View 1 (spheres, helix red, strand yellow):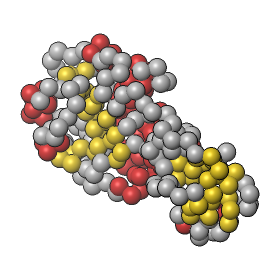
View 2 (cartoon, one colour):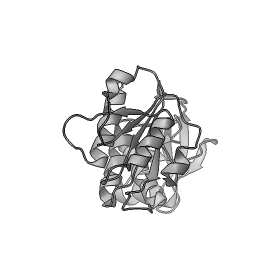
View 3 (cartoon, helix red, strand yellow):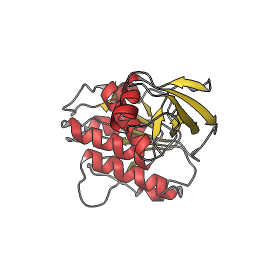
Length: 235
């Protein structure tokens, strides 16, 4: 069944956005009376019927409500430096949304080669991924922030940093326990600076290793996203 996103679902009679309406009528060619699913990205997963097809303003009517679907047993926050090639960062957001993540923050580091991201475009990619994966929860996408400012925020108890520098490190699975909220920090192509690693360590971040091979930023972030969900029996 086709899924459509409406940020606020309060009434039983709703109008799809112009973009969703066009997709509904021009691409999918749905007709009056066809059944669809509506999600608000907050756990709502409602059955609905297409009441008035229109390429700019489709009206849908909810026939069965279902709240709080797919409630996750832990909160996973990925704080990742945007890649120089934005397509790689977009790939990460798409796949992380598909596999399961609760919050993503683009962090700007000393070695970052990209310092600006277009949040509306990234949000569209995540919405499309949420719908394709039949998920009812849209991850929170925070605005980009400098790493030093990010580290001053109120952060969860379990915090991890993956970097390529020396020092004692452990595997993520050796430090993490099922059900714990977790923040994972991944640096840019040039890695974190020694100063950044030191500051993170002083803030309680535990250093983790991704094995003996060096992974790209988006690969490391995705691997840890999958591992965290696997340890929580969600993949």
